[in-house]
Length: 207
Image (cartoon, rainbow, N blue to C red):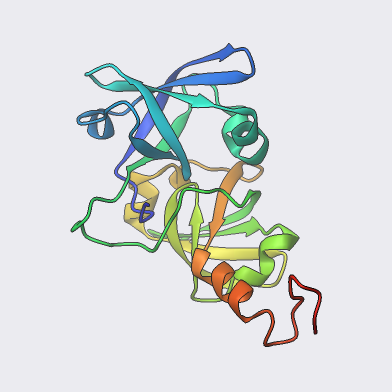
């Protein structure tokens, strides 16, 4: 589990295909410092498994077809910058919200409105995710825990503070760029648990 508090911005230093799998080598001195084989690291909000730490500043990850199909990492290229977060330690500070690292969909940055020190950024919102996104609710964008400032059903807007602009890749994103989205998992569980009581479909077909 993660919190959506990015620890560092890493750099993709190598991308190579190995059959149907794409192997990424990522440089990230902070998250590499104690990385071990089998550890989980969120890369742009996608939970991936370390398959080969080098004991230095880099580590390798494998992207299977499912990951390539469902996340923006299908466009990973050498030199690309990525948000990195290690899995939450028991007893650690919970600064963001519950983030699984399971990407729900890919959105597009539509518009950014720079302020004096902060930006407002508007993203597209896939139709199947719209019901889980509410004003002042939590959403994860490329692994960053953010608060929804506004939503109109097919788009949503967030406000980025100076620290987020400086310490994550969201300060670099331009209109047209794809981003990974993860909605609040609590909303999905509430929907399923209450479906049989508020007029939603039940798995057994009963009303």
